[in-house]
Length: 93
Image (cartoon, rainbow, N blue to C red; front, side):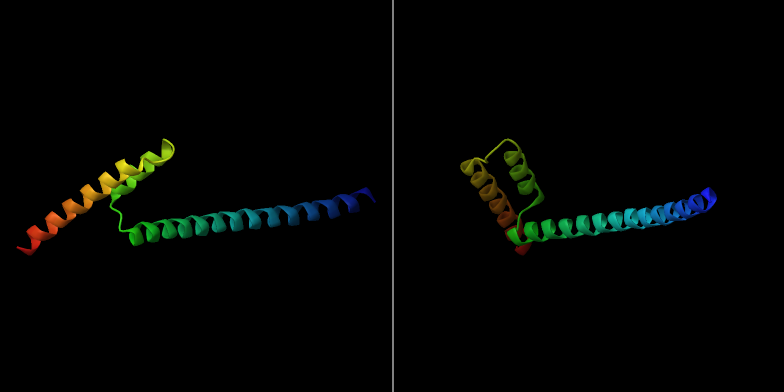
């Protein structure tokens, strides 16, 4: 009788391991989908804000040090936009 119980437990253990493997795969797939969606969302926000990589870098550096200094950020954004305007003027000439 002991062997019947062992066989039943062995089968239950096999089923549990298969389910575990299926869930591990599902979690990895969901994590990847979430990461892709998060990256897309960030990309869209940066694109909509019309922020250059340099401006984004400056903003993130400011945020890592606490609350960004509005005057310093304004100077960076004004400087960047004036440089972009100069480049466009030179291209149009």
